[in-house]
Length: 407
Image 1 (spheres, rainbow, N blue to C red):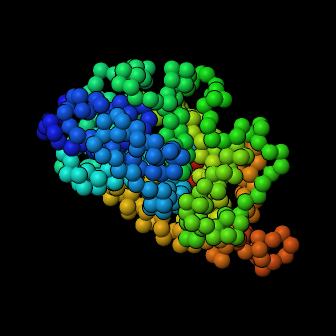
Image 2 (cartoon, helix red, strand yellow):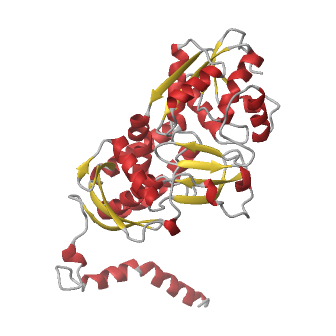
Image 3 (spheres, rainbow, N blue to C red):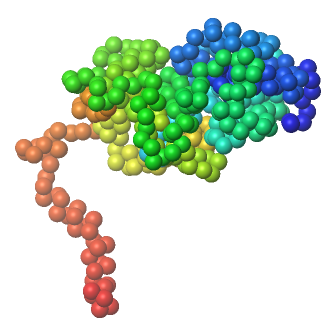
């Protein structure tokens, strides 16, 4: 039990309406004697939020706060992450990880509004989210207590959690035959648990809830032109779009063509490997398009350093350190580098692949006059001196080896 929390205090719970958070409301009331305020962040997960509100009240919540954070999620979190090209372990586009700092920030705001003593979350003691939520709370309100029921109660798994829900007459969508733990927002949906915990078992078709099987996707490719302004996606096929509308449109197109399916075994922050299945249709299109445009507008050294930054940003985001000084400092480079990432990119969607085929930008560093095989202004004789100087260390080393008799 967490010290400093007394019966009658108010606790704000990060509430999704899923299995874990649904049973936490009665558990908090039974074990701490507190009043529970359920906070639900609308990140475009597609839930019927009226039903989520009703369910929270039926489970014993004193109040329910639902915030529409979809645009803030994209403009202040997902799109800056896109600009950094952060990808965790070369595969995961960080859809769950990037949402947690935003939820934590607003969890604190609601806690302040209701004069709460503590906040609570439904992340397990084995997962990354407990770290992400709690680091976010520490960044904004280190005085708040944090209750993590999965680190306290005797419930050991999802089957026992389902039994607890049944005992307390709380309806949940998870069943023993479909025990997957899912997290969805405008950026992606993740799937964990059940048979996925055995990496030797192929991902069953019933896991996927968003994207079409690439084998059953349309046999005709579809082209989409994505427009960027300073690294931020702003248009589709020449038509300017607001962030939420743009993301929803790309998700629809990507899902139709089976874009963005990933099955991976990843290294969790807490020290174990886990298997996850992710669907990121629109995000996959945006990453491909952004990378295509940077290949046109970034010089070689900027592009090379950006790769280093992307790796570090991915770790920071995955580890829950969005509000860290290092992440903010790295974003200064990312924002500066993206000043020239303006233009349009043509992407072909076809049976699970998003392939960049063409790009244009007013900041293009590509010179057809230099690159052409047919004449141009390039002086081929200049290459001789360049190669001599560039290879000089190799020649010096070889002479040294010959003098030593090692050659």
